[in-house]
Amino acid sequence: MNRYFVFIVFLCACLFLSSCANLDAVSSGNKKIYPFAGEWEGGGIDSEGNEFTFVAKVTSLGGDKYRVLILDKFDTQKSPMHVMDGVMNDNKFVYTSDGGAYVGGGELDDEIFKGYYKGSVDGTYEMRRIRYRK
Image 1 (cartoon, rainbow, N blue to C red):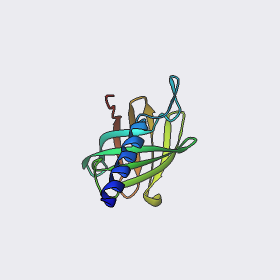
Image 2 (cartoon, one colour):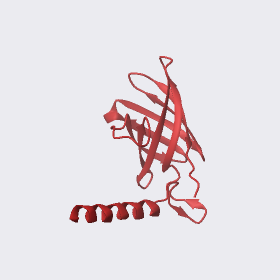
Image 3 (cartoon, rainbow, N blue to C red):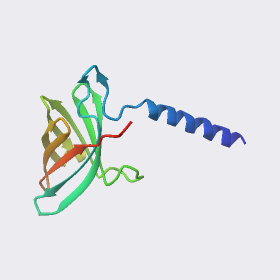
């Protein structure tokens, strides 16, 4: 009985916190404070001709800094395929990935991000913001 009660309280707390989260970003009036934060889906091609698809969770680290987790799907227990840390200035994002193994950048145009990466394999990709209905 005690474990069941703890589980119910934990579940309620999780549901409450998730309902308070704004997946698109924190807004102040019409101006978004964190324009890159949110959930994205995309695809690209590497320098060897391999096409790929992915989803991404972008979180603000404060100021102009962001972390991008590249995943094969959202609901997974797997570690991210790539972790990209970088800075956004004037809608241009410059980052390093995987402990410095890759460098890259790209440009945010509202709902679309077009990027590139360079490392042992180079490539280009495009992501679109996922909008959830309220």
